[in-house]
Image (cartoon, rainbow, N blue to C red; front, side):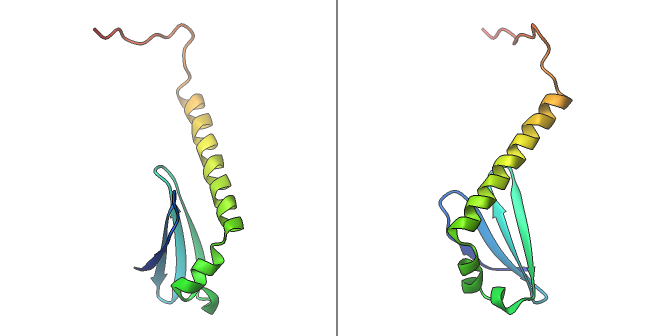
Length: 93
């Protein structure tokens, strides 16, 4: 797999990969990532094609998924590590 380029974005790292003719696009934040495997469709064969595909409406939905992933993580944390009533922090001097 090799990187063929990046799509500029102020808050996300968006990497475009090629592997045996197939194109994948990875969206990353500090804690989460999403990968879209676009296959060997010629519309996505170039960085320019992927940049066209990654439009503003698509990025809104990607960010919504990141928000949902974060919510899922927080809920899992609450279930796995519940806060005890009356739990206090250690005093640090």
